[in-house]
Length: 240
Image 1 (tube, helix red, strand yellow):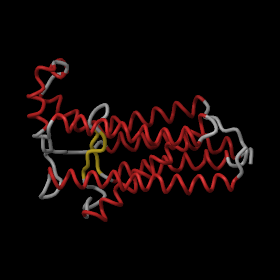
Image 2 (cartoon, one colour; image 1 turned 135 degrees about the horizontal axis):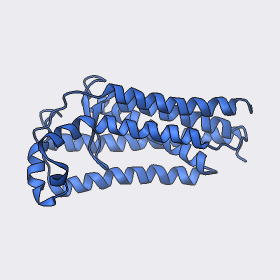
Image 3 (cartoon, one colour; image 1 turned 135 degrees about the vertical axis):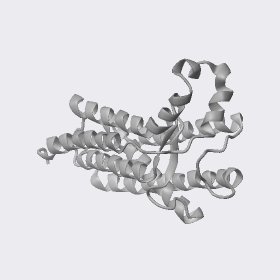
Image 4 (cartoon, rainbow, N blue to C red; image 1 turned 90 degrees about the vertical axis):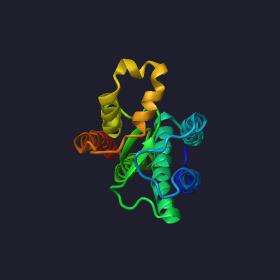
């Protein structure tokens, strides 16, 4: 079993690792925006070369693989591996915005719109939303790691896992809601599946400007996740 001091060392090094990854990620975005948005990033999105889009998608996937790999190597069991992953992800995501603010003065505010993710669909929302969710991830990870450091065998029960997964899916729907609504107003689902119509899809993407964020869905997702975290915390608190 790891001792608490060992956990402290792991926490320090994985925090530094995640912050360094955040800087690399923000540096890439600085280069891309200087090339694609010389006047500053804003909607509607500028259409880019297909090869760059593919590269960006795989860059995002690679980032997840890197964070996942470090977590798998570090964690003693499945729940702990999961905890280190969401901890690294949360720190990485928060410092990504911190470095962008320091490097290029963006975002202008917490309510500034951003493209959050491209896989499996485009996620868009105010900057404050991924930041809040990242702190939620760090909270859950902190509880799991804290209990594990006290030689407690930590396992997420089925009800807790369902709440966490359901809340996460609700958040994804909230982030993809406005963009999906806009696209489906102009192109049917059958047309989206028809790859020969991709030029029309690109045209509509160039017209998209975020109108509203589904805060009801977002806070519902956060509440469901926090409910799962609460059940987990109070269940294990009795064992300390």
